[in-house]
Length: 215
Image (cartoon, rainbow, N blue to C red; front, side):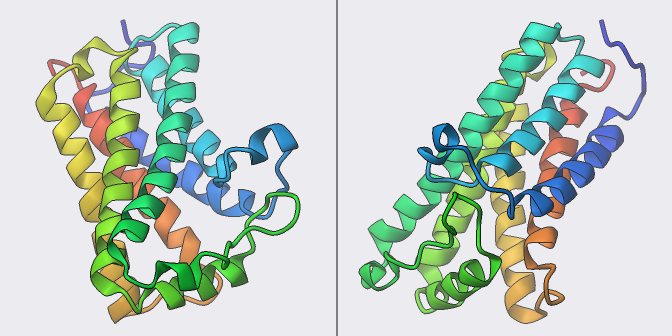
C-alpha cells in the first residue's frame, strides 16, 4: 500500500528527478573512493537518481525499505551499464574512436573534469551518427534498467508497456537533448545540468505514471 496517496505520482516523481538532477550536477566535482572508482563511471549521479527512484517506490509504490534499497542498487547498476553501453556502441560504430580513447574526462581521484568532458564531447561530434546512436542507447539502457529495478519492488510496474515506454522516453530524451545542444546550445557552465535534470525528471515521471492508482 502506498505511504503517500496522490492521483499524480508522476508529478512528484518528476520533482524528485529535478532534485536528483541538480545534485547529480554538483556531485561531478566530488572525488570517488577507490572502491567506487573501479567502475570507471560517474557513480554519484547514479546514486542521486537511485535515491529518487527508491523514494518513489517506497512512498507511492508501497515498497518496503529493503525493496527500496534494492531499487537504489539496481538503478546504480543501470546507470553504470548505460555509461559503458554508450561508450561501447560509439566505439563499435565510429571509425576513428581511437583518436578519442585517451580523452577520459576524469580527474585524479575519480571526479569528472567538466572542461575535459566538454572537450571530449566536441571531439565526438565529428562522428555524428555513432554519437547519436550511442546517446540513444545509453538513454534507453539507463531508463530501461531503472524501470526494471523499480518493477522488482513495485508490482504495478511489471508490465511490458510500462518498461518499453520508460526505455523509449530515455532514448528520445537523450536524442532531444543532443539536438537541442547542437542547434541552440546550452548556457555556459550548465551543459550537464540540463542533461541531468531533464533526463532524470522525465524518466522518473514515466516510472511514477506506472504507479498511479488503478495502473
